[in-house]
Image 1 (tube, rainbow, N blue to C red):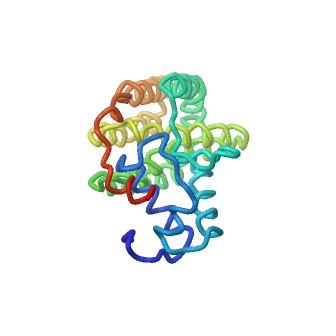
Image 2: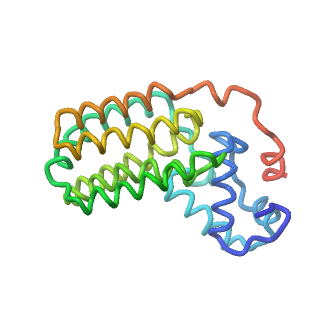
Image 3: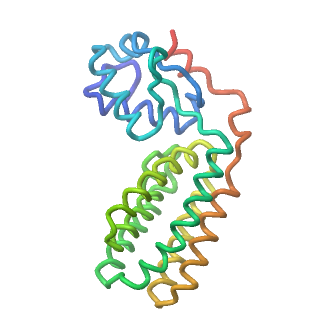
Length: 228
């Protein structure tokens, strides 16, 4: 969707803004003023608010009372804590998955891996990060613990934003390869190996984060357009 054309729906606007965030055209901390967005997309304030709500649920923006919407700005400390928590939880999840997964579950996850790989050439790709995160949610779904699934979904959602902002394209491809290696270990019934690979994967993703990435000059064209 071109920003010079009216958006068809709140979803269109949310998707376009999400792509701009993924492309780092809207750096963390950028304020998204409703009035400016209304002018930019030629839509009502109601539709803009609906789009911002979608982005807020995806944790791409923060809605701050009396201040409005701003692109989320996860700190390095917050990011480290999220990945530390995930390692504790998902090592156990890996073992549970290995014990409970059935052939149909592996077929479903193999299909998911193909979808992951199909997005690796897309730059930028919010969908790629979503699929990489959804792999972990699918593991929790197989285990069948609803509380665990909700916790994993929350942590994955926060992680997806962090990796979208601070991970390189090369490391995103490595993540998909590591998902495949984990699945092979689990399919063989080696729970210890599966847990080890999960820990390695999460540590690798964290180690690949570059928190200086937004220190480089931002692409101000879209930012300027949004804030005019």
